[in-house]
Image 1 (cartoon, one colour):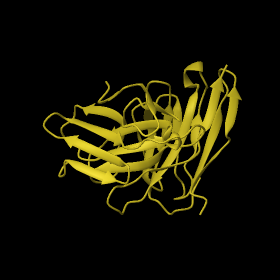
Image 2 (cartoon, helix red, strand yellow):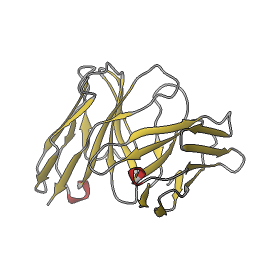
Image 3 (tube, one colour):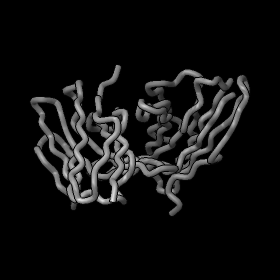
Image 4 (cartoon, one colour):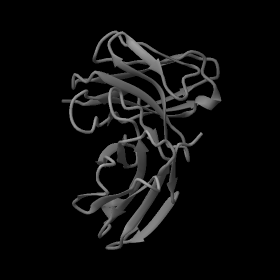
Length: 114
Length: 113
């Protein structure tokens, strides 16, 4: 089991460029999430999905799009990058069973927008 | 709107000491309170979690204390070790379905030998 994988690990963009952050999980988890982590602000939920074909907005969705065509993959798209999107992005997956609905996080993508 | 407030922002403890991190929440509908541990360059990982039907949960050197009336919960790390040096996040969510976790701002813990 690779768990949750994210690519790329690092990325530098210019303002206005678009890109897709990839996330995949091999644990057959129904729930998947995208967070951004900024100093002093913890992790904030961007978008989440409760199953293939179903997505919803989190706390900070503006400037980001998601889709969920398969259980395994949950890509995050930046439509027109802005310096305010400089952050570390984490993808997480969650099983629907178990006592604590533990979220399993990927290793993160560090994004810098110039 | 910060629904989960975490303190302190940073903490330095000597090896063998007790590390204490506090969190307070506002939404009384929250009923699941996990703590996540994050090492540099890694994603957060679940450390320990509690539901409000108990006031304390202990796993090894890690203990969560929960005070429902005060809407506060804390993480105690006994016999702190240099390997415990990491950033710790408290979080809260409502039970059922997708648990939309609300995270605290994080505490950077350094345990000195």
